[in-house]
Length: 330
Image 1 (cartoon, rainbow, N blue to C red):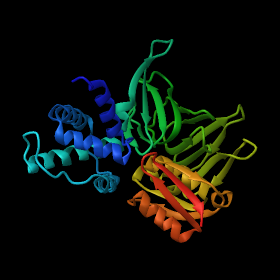
Image 2 (image 1 turned 120 degrees about the vertical axis):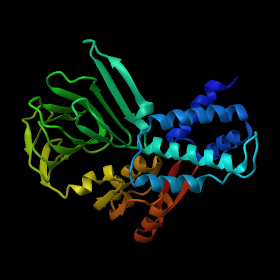
Image 3 (image 1 turned 60 degrees about the horizontal axis):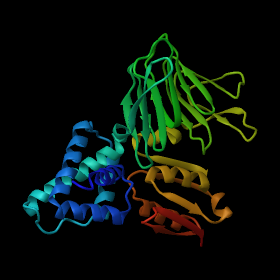
């Protein structure tokens, strides 16, 4: 196939959910009419299915509905496939796309590196619009949120050290060896516990403790210790503070929900960008400072924006080509 490298990249982006609606339609039309391209696409889809672990994540259904709403049903038979046969294959590859985006985005973003110590390190990156759940070498479970990157050694020797940029929820297996999450802001150290760390470089730093005990040290300050139901965050003076919180507000993303309680809309928009893989532009400072309360679970982006439009003095428009949502004062 003459354009195979180009087609490989296009299919790769499709399965990440990074193509525009028009590009997705063009790709699916090519699948329908080009027998050689269809064979390539289905081979990629089959490979993905073999890698994906089936999940009961409720968000799969929501993403499936969003996907169907963007893609017109396949019409006529072409390339030797009956309409019913090709329709089944279409459903299969679409389902693989959804599962790959939500559950196994990491599969396509895993690479091995060797540091100066010759210790092999695994790196997992999740694009906007996806999230992933996986197990570390010590048996600890990690949920990695969209727009996040995590790296760790293939085998822990002594201290269990990992590096995080973005957001992750950890359910850590108890051990004599400390478990240390290093972020651009500082380190979070535990022995065995459940906690959430948000450490995007373009957002606020937070660590929220659900169970157990964690120690946090940033900016060379003395370490602070959290109890369950507490959150550490950096204040305007770049110093750590501790407050009591409803932990579900900060951990529900791993269960397919975003919960907002009196949160500035600028921060709401930032979380929505990662959740829906879109760019959000707010052209009014007053809108950024408005407070928003609500829960996003199974809703599409348009459904969420209609809810926001009815509850706030805003209007919006969405450019499918650039995946840009512009919000203005009404």
